[in-house]
Structure formats: structure tokens, C-alpha cells
Image 1 (cartoon, rainbow, N blue to C red):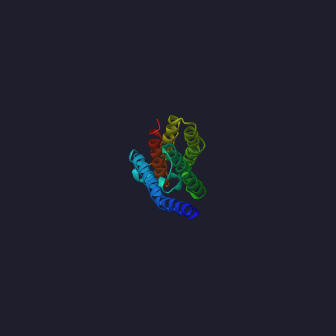
Image 2 (image 1 turned 90 degrees about the vertical axis):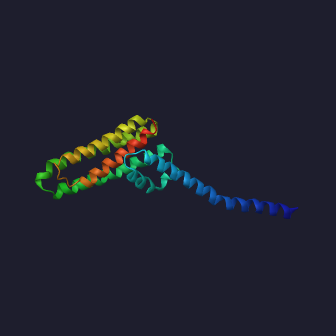
Image 3 (image 1 turned 90 degrees about the horizontal axis):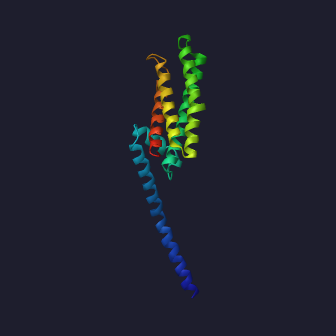
Length: 176
């Protein structure tokens, strides 16, 4: 009788272990499908896919979680820009001083106002305010770029900030 119990337990254990990879693989496929279907509803599919797949937390996240990840990407991009602005202010020409100062102010507004607004709104389940914060950040990046009249040393950072912000806003719109 003991042998029968041992064989039965071993058999169920064997079935469970062989089924586990299929369950994990199925979950990964579903996670990828959510990321891909969500990113298809954004204005920049490639930025969306790259940003989300670079973060392991996106696997298993719902749409709100994906939006929260994108807010973190916004924070990273804003910090990249503000760090470059400070570097340029220390070494840049006087002709760009006013534009750089204006951009520093805009990126501070993004980091102190827009991003915290979006993050808090997502945590509280108020997607409209999260969308507004994301769109405001995109606008601030565009305004910064325009400060230089076509000769911006921040084009790469401003475009990156704009792109991740509008992608974030589009993902948040799925929660409305």
C-alpha cells in the first residue's frame, strides 16, 4: 500500500513538473500579447515596446502597471535631460544661457509637477490626471526644444522625453 501511495505521489509530481514550463510559457505569451496590443494603441510602437520590454516588471503587469512603468521611464528621460542641461550650463556658450535656463525650469516642472501627478493619479485610480501630467511633460519637452530656434543641443533628450510621455498618455487613455 505504501508503494502505491509513493508511486501515486511521484506520478502527480512528475505531471506537475512537466506541466509547469507550459504554464509559464503560456503566461509569457499572454504578457507579450498585452504589451504588444497596448503598444499598438500608442503613437510610437517602437518606443513603447523597447521601454516596456526593458523592464522585467512589465511581465505580468496589467495596463495600469504598464503605465506606471512608463512613468518611471519618463523620470529617467527627464533626469537625463536635466543632467545634460546642467552640464551645458557649466560649459556652454553665453548665447544658449537663456534657453538652457528656460529648459532647466521646464524639466524641473516635469520632475516636480508632471511626473508626480501622473504617478499619484495612477496609484489612486484617477487616469485622467495621469494623462494630463503625461501630456504636460510632452509639451514641456517641445517648448524646451523650441527655445533654441532650430539649434538645440538637447534635441535627442527632448525628443525622447516627448516620445515616452505621449506613449505614457496613450497607455493611460486605455484606463479611462
